[in-house]
Image 1 (tube, rainbow, N blue to C red):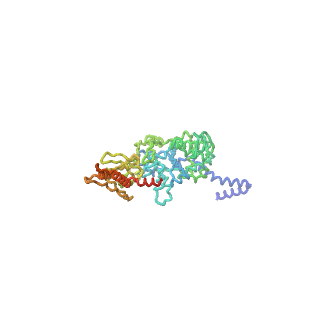
Image 2: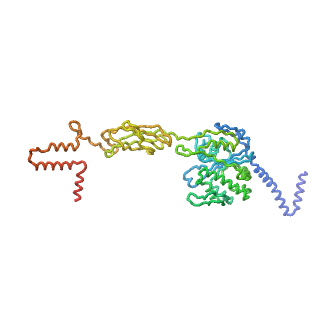
Image 3: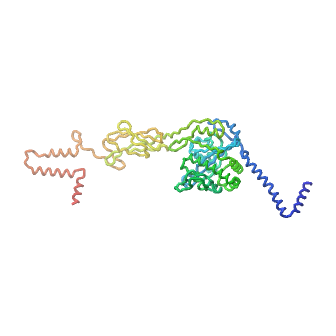
Length: 522
């Protein structure tokens, strides 16, 4: 009853107030819960360490790595992967599934009050998620998107993200990554423009792919377009240089936000452009981490870059991690005892031997040659090397880096046996050999495809010797040679003239055609 009476007394006093004071009283009453919520919210985001749950119950350290997981999880560390997908009209034509061009890991240690950034080159060679496949780390998203779910699964994007996070964990020795922020590079333009640009000291003149100047060297206020082109360019320093410049630009962005007093705008900006960002962090975690990071100077944010040496496997370029550097970074950032792993070396896949290797004699216009044909043994039959042995002599290479499946050997002659040996080549790997042999008979064979008939064999005399036309002519002249005692000179001349006419008509080189041409000329 007393409580009810007090309420009635307060209400009666409220009615005696003038109207302006009544309005003010109502606003104050409404602001009490709002203020309380704001205070609670600020308290929450001001202590971001309390916004993250421990992950050790769901963690299984890979068997190949030996480090103290319990000791690691006793520390208050949060690891977040930043994935930058670069989509464009040109890439839409080439790829049905995008791949992250930018991979960074932000490790926030709330106990030591440190922030480390690890840049991971997109060509790093690693095991893909929990599979037995090894490939470039930025291909992990493709594998997860394409093969990580059942046919028709609508959540393929998340499968791609999951594969990527697990693959990054493999690179970092099994350190878990449970959080990510992914955005398309085109979204950067909108976000930077919403900040009014970012002040940055451009280290060189920046050009786009058409050779047009985007930004001059020197300190300036970059708009979203210029900011994006600086993130993308690999013209200076390649992929590793680009990652380092991206980290420098991110630090410059934090400096700009602090110096321009834009920290208070972070919640508003996040809520306004939430659709441009894909993340599993909630609103409080993102704002809390952003505000926490604003308390760090740029020199207090430590950057690391994984490096390695380039190698090719089956014609594809990969970067093999420098295992010594890898162990140093992992141990320094995560404070664990990660052992140096053996240095990797890539080898090309040995191709299967070619199939259906055959040799066939063909004869075009009386010139014999050997046609060799075959089929690839597998997809790694990229090129071929062909050897030939003539009549049992030592092999001689007659074709190197042969790309086709047919070879014509014209350096052959009748009466010889040719043995061929063929190998498939995949860069540095060579298949087992396959062989084929064939003999060209003394008489040139007809080409069954062209229907060409073999030439008739030359006539033989009584002793089995060939009789050519010259031999026949000499024999005929000997038979018809006049007696030395004959005094009929005119008959001899007539006989010789007849012989010459007969020989001209029988000339196989085509003298009749020449005569016709001469007659037609006049």
